[in-house]
Image 1 (cartoon, helix red, strand yellow):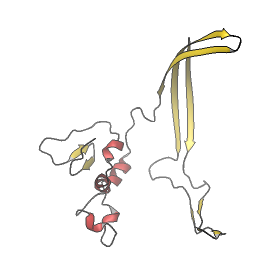
Image 2 (image 1 turned 135 degrees about the vertical axis):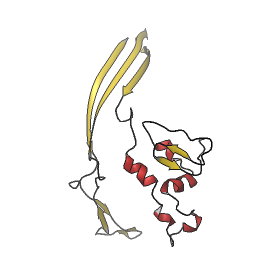
Image 3 (image 1 turned 90 degrees about the vertical axis):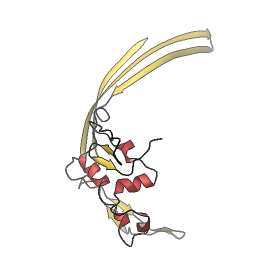
Image 4 (image 1 turned 120 degrees about the vertical axis):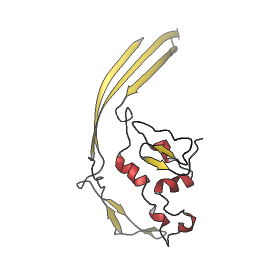
Length: 169
């Protein structure tokens, strides 16, 4: 029998002006072009930090026993249970700029775009995702969830509104 408990402090940086660029090359049957046609740098989202720090706590409890059946066979049998507390998913709230992005008009619905004829007037990016079978509400974490009223024709998740109602599976 045993118990393991540990604290892990994590620090990660995803994007900054000092990160190495990502290069894009043309590739054909003749080979790869010697010069890249594009170079991009990871950009920091306005209002957020590129550095993420997290304090993670882990706990494991296990029961194990060894049985020597003979000089060539030993059985190691056991059961283990683990749990983890990580601020990345405990009390997480989707940032407002993500919600704002879902509620902005879909640029793909602008006149002249390939699927503009399939768009409703004023269709948001969130509504376009819903038409494609992706329920944005499945990926939005709010501190409080406001259920839709029976007379409402839309569902509201905090400040994220999707119309028409999206049915979960």
